[in-house]
Image 1: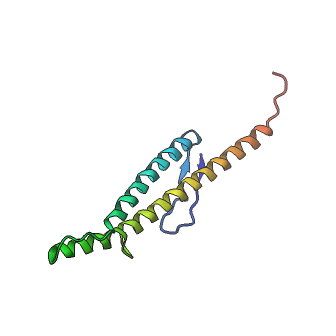
Image 2 (image 1 turned 135 degrees about the vertical axis):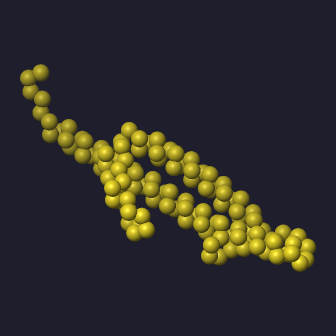
Image 3 (image 1 turned 60 degrees about the horizontal axis):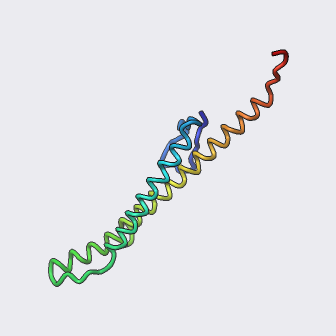
Length: 117
């Protein structure tokens, strides 16, 4: 297994390892999850469209939906976009770990001399 390090201090993944035979499967599943997150971002952006629901309470609900969808700090789009970036970073770390493992495996194989049969 090859270790994956992270530059993000919020998560201590120094002990995180990827089994080479599972890395491509993990990469594909993370990609599928990214597709779902992308769809959720598109749906949240729809919430950001101001919908005239009337006055009073309905107006408050419409404004809340717009703020929640694409508003500033804490909006659904902001949170989902950040999550998508974390998923991409994880895929990158998995790819680097797999490349390191493959390189080390190739070096080890090159250093083995089989003589005599």
